Length: 189
Image (cartoon, rainbow, N blue to C red; front, side, top):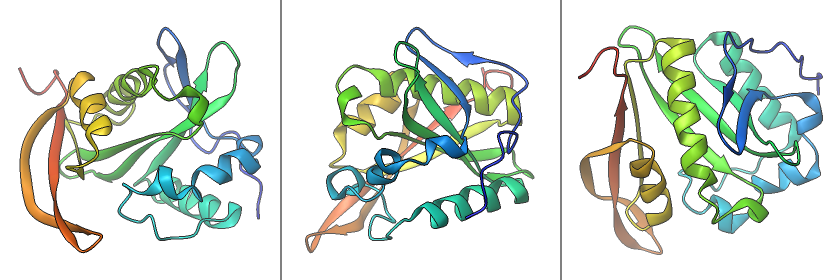
C-alpha cells in the first residue's frame, strides 16, 4: 500500500466543536483498531455495502481514488481530549453540476457511542461540505430500523424528505429507506 500523504486533502478552514475536530485522514490513522470498524458486523449492519470486506489497501484505494477524482473526500473525526481518531466523515459522491452530495458519518470507536458525538460530527460535516465544497444540498438515506442514525441526523439539522417503501431486504423482510437532507442556508431559506 502506498502511504497516505498528509496533504491528500487540504482544508481552508478548521472544523471543530466542543468535543471534536475534523482533519484529513493520515497514514497513521489506518491502524488495526481503525480497520476493525469496517470488519465489525454489528457496526456495519446498516451500511448498504456491509458485506464488502475491507482491508487497509481497499480502504486506501477507495479514499485516494475518490479524492484524486474530486468526487469523494474522507476525513478523520478526532476526539479533542484524547486526540484519537474515533470515526470518519465521507463527503461524496459529489455531483458538481448540481452541487449535491451524500454525507456519511461513522463513529467507529464504540467507546464514544451514546455521547451525542455523532450529532456533533454531522454538524461539522454539514459545515465542511458547505464551506469547502460549496454543496447546496446534502442528502442521504438509512434503514428505517436504524433509529439512532435517524435521530442523529435530524438533531443535526437534517429533515426527512421521503421514504422508499420496502427498499432493503433484512433477514428476508422488506425495510423502508428513509431519505434525509440538509440544505445550505446560502442557497435555501
